[in-house]
Image (cartoon, rainbow, N blue to C red; front, side, top):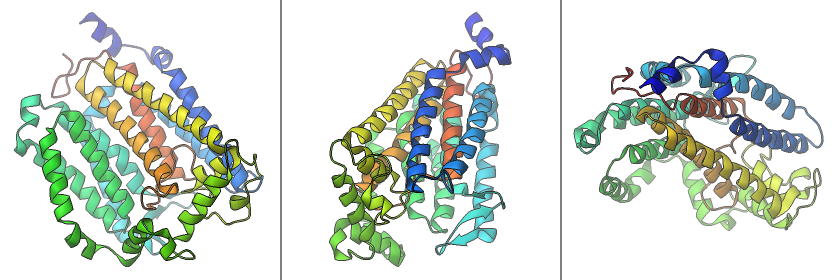
Length: 379
């Protein structure tokens, strides 16, 4: 028990020494690749994207370290408060949000436009880690204990879908499902839910908006509308193929710099990277992502408390889903859903969300030796 007390009584300066600095360095390296690609996306200029992204990253990096050194029991104790605040922001968007491209997803703060659905992703991981922390394996096996976490997932999913943002709503469902799996929910329950979802597909289709149906149909057959809905993915595939093994060179991508590739600073930034640096560049970025994920799993496995384990694993799953869905999207393997590539795509709220997640991950690493009772007290 002495080891646990020493961990909990570390001074602030000692906690900074305990920070997983190799992981922080990896985050900085990946973000720097993003700055370079945003510089290229603007045809060799730091404005308008790279300079803003660097500023947001600097702020987010400080926030990440602050989150990391705060006692993990603070985050456990106030998880429901942060969840309620995030849901409140989604409700605020419903009534006072800014409308862009026929969607109401943002809060205008003059200096920045916040997208609360992004914050909800990491908050959902936090609150589900808090809920499952207090349950033992027998409790998780009882269906009535799963009602509360299902409601915790359903509330933001319904609010996000109303914006409308089907991609983020489904992303929240995936994050929630992953937390159920990590907590130890039996596989057969997932099979039942997925079977019910497949059966409900015809009903769900009738509730989709026209543009959502069009995106799904375009995913199944991009050639059905090559100058409309299918244009994005067809140009993305052309750019990916034209990069070859080592790419056309920095600032020399034809599809992106001749404006054939849309949204090259956000959704399709991986396509631009692959065109300019080829397969080697794309695999290099994937290698860096893999190192981050391995660090995350290592932190989770060494945590001596269930909350830290679930929080660390949840953050890594969140990071993996971000990267996997974006890259699969630009390759035409999944429908275009507008998810950013973590630490690379332009977007302040997404950057802050990812860095906050890494803050929780490092927090779990620093406080890995603390043993926490089911009700949040030390033991």
